[in-house]
Length: 507
Ligand SMILES: [Zn+2]
Image 1 (cartoon, rainbow, N blue to C red):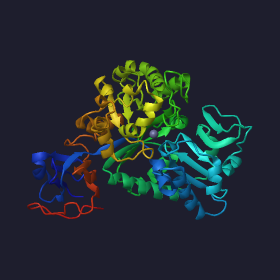
Image 2 (spheres, helix red, strand yellow; image 1 turned 60 degrees about the vertical axis):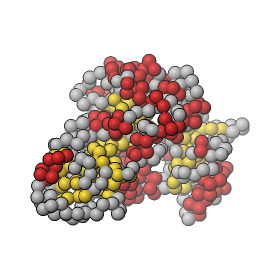
Image 3 (cartoon, rainbow, N blue to C red; image 1 turned 90 degrees about the horizontal axis):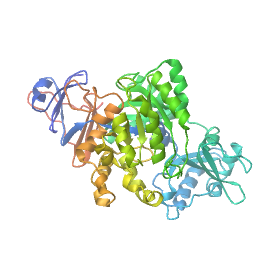
Image 4 (spheres, rainbow, N blue to C red; image 1 turned 90 degrees about the vertical axis):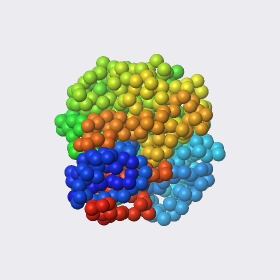
């Protein structure tokens, strides 16, 4: 690979054959040298955007299952299920995700009887958009052995009608009962979905992601990596249930390479606002991890040099996470404890992020989707919800992401949500951040949150040459490791710079 000059954008950037930045700005042309490949671009060259919270395995699954995202009513959802089911064998499972009753004219939770009709009696398993509940058919409940006499499992609920019959809505850990019998896609299906999902993320301008998924997603990424098929950098976190495996293997945070790294474990302290399971200081919601178990998990992770990502949405769960992390201020140099979502933080706890050194890993687009729900469910606390600017002022380091597929992974929409949207929507506009702050949360601070702050996140000689080039509010090109991974069709055509060779740089 020759050196490359990314020209015409602001600033211009030169990359060496090793995919690292040689020079930025005025010195870039000279640094690239005469034999450099010249890539003509327009617009602003930002450090490559990193999504600090995404679910690659779920995105990959989404590519090969029934996608119910964007359906606007129960009827529209059922029509899509019916059409999908008709193409399947009589006894095949209908597996899907993305339905969202809060967006329907009548937001009442649907029932298994709807599915029994729409899917012709097949077993159906449909995860809700937020992944914290699922909608299943009668055949599915029968296969899972769930009936009137089945008790709710700890941390989970089978919704029931007046006669105590399960309605087909199952919440939180009750989903495990069904997930056990649900058929899984093959490795080949998963890899196909994963490759498609990654390509879609590169098109959105992402050069790196922090994924929170299970071991099968990690295995899939390793297979793609072995074939040289990763278009962007992935830092991977496994669920708490896999902590013991990581301990026994002796694998530590940062193991891997610049394309695919293992980072830590993710634990759920509570549920979600949408499923009404966020653990609040007023006592509402659901706790998914007892404090003693949380402290134990942190101690074990520190001993094994593994980082922790703590899912906490309600102000009660956030406080518990901070309490548990407080004694562990400086465990080792790349100890980067994170609270994922931190959607609702009590004002007294805001300063603790900075003082304990906890990263607030937040997804600005959630505020756009949740606004009405938050006003309804948390009327007294919305002034402290999605409080990006207040947390920043209090000294917290923010890492921004999307939580895709729960929300769109489009980072430009995330930046818009974090900056101008709150003013336009007149929803606690004082909590919006500046464009520069939003960009930092998607670049250098997201890099810090995965211990990569000396490698990516800044346009600086020696750093890996990852760029997101944005022109007229659209992604013009995505560059990872000094190579164009995606470029908008019909964008500026390649041209020769004086004395330099020019050719298509697409793989
Ligand atoms: Zn998530």
